[in-house]
Length: 351
Image (cartoon, rainbow, N blue to C red; front, top):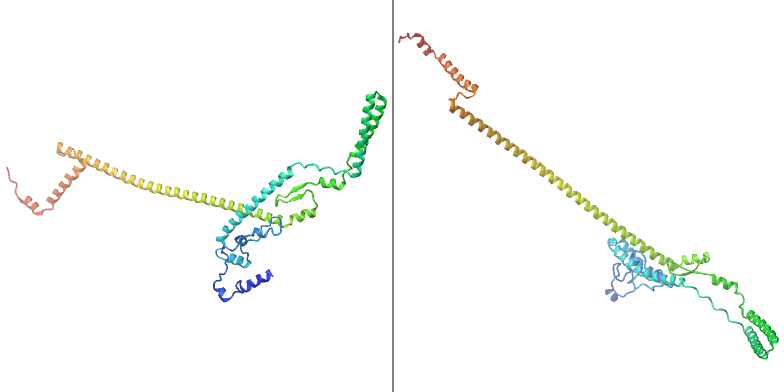
């Protein structure tokens, strides 16, 4: 019936039986509503694992719908909601495992306690009557022995004591328990064991069929799924934290390298600027030195000209200057024809 109803809901919708008036206030359930079970969406719902077992959690108060699950898997927000649902499921499963581990600890304590011996079985009525008769005879004989001893009849008293000893031997043999039945001995020799997965008590070294039946049982499989999910979830979280830590370290290392590269470039530019400034300073210093040397030579030449009339000047410079002037004068004279004729025709006048 439930399967047919689910099929009709899938084909015609869950509001197929509502009237037009009821449809107005009807709101279709979506996978992200609070009424929908997020555990069922991502993994499994623990309420479905232990149905009709000693660990039954009862029906889940939220909606389980395969159609909503398929809608969730196709949703673009799937990856956004999976971590949230898994975290809630892990928290719920951890609470289950904590309760189970407490039960397992109590079971270990019970198994660790010393097993008290079973009380002896009660004596049958026939044996009880025989013991009662023997005890009465022994009591009468002891009274007679005491009377004979007071009368000084030692031999007779010793004879009665030998009868008392015989009766006591019969009483001891009659009081002993019969051998324990072999089946009872095997039952007492059986030892209990505790399943560490689901906390169930088992018979140690039990038959393979019974052990296999327990391992394939709903409770054992359910708690195995819960424990496996917690282990997987914690490993995934640890791996994610490790990857995040490595990414942060890589980012810090890249930033450090970038700072070092920037510092290296800054130092290189600063070094080039300093070297250029040093070269400019050296050139400026060389210009100052050259100008100082020129000024020094100029002062030296001017000082020599004022003292000796220019005789101390460099002879090449003076020769060039004077020689050039004389050559110019001689050339001028030789190239003037009027002056040459006049000088040649004029008579020499005596002084």
